[in-house]
Image (cartoon, rainbow, N blue to C red; front, top):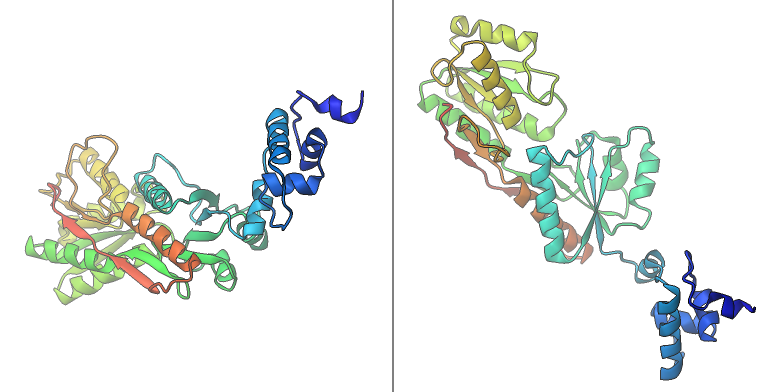
Length: 343
């Protein structure tokens, strides 16, 4: 039995152009012209073309997508690098981000590849993975101090940052400053003059902007700000914060502002279990305005920042960069104060 007849009707696990060429009785070059769109002045007869296509179907040949992408110098795949650990689909903020990215990719006919902050790998290893040709460009969600930021900023990889603005990289953010000023004004109008502020447990430029803007506006209005911070991203209170709440009457605190909605919801749960009435004893305000997956027992006063829209816009900006169009160094999307029954 010769090699050609051994292949007939028996799909091979790793079928190559050479296999197809043998089956069709042509050269691998001619098979490549027909199946992979190789640029050539070679003219292939209709009969030969049909033999090659029939052989490819019989053997189950699949064109090499990566090789074809290298020839075209594009993959139509956008990457996401999330520098704050792992994306959790059940986390409302993460779900908003993924929804917006997928919406943007669908509108621009791109695919999405997700990368995490793999701490067991070096910066160079992560960068090589991102810049190795698998993706055309990258949406970056990371702290400006993330060591990968400097690496991608000085590279030829097209990058757009979102959530946290990064100098030297086009960035799409929500208007954290305007939202925090709106919170301060709202609480002042409600008669509050001393506020407990729950800061972000980690390093986040967005959360820091919120706190600084609120603090500045509160001082302008003559309000006192008492800072607290937990190490728990879900927002559970620790000893220092519990101590501030225990002294709230002494300090004149009747309102609390939280850097994010999970922090605010955790505070409300703490108040409920410790006999603190919301909002009669303590008004509570959050930030982000992401709808919870289940019907809440309270309607949180918060700032609505449409993170899905931010993510979608980041995709549009990245596609514009890839197409060589000018983009703004910083795109700031508006937010709005939503007044619920917690203030």
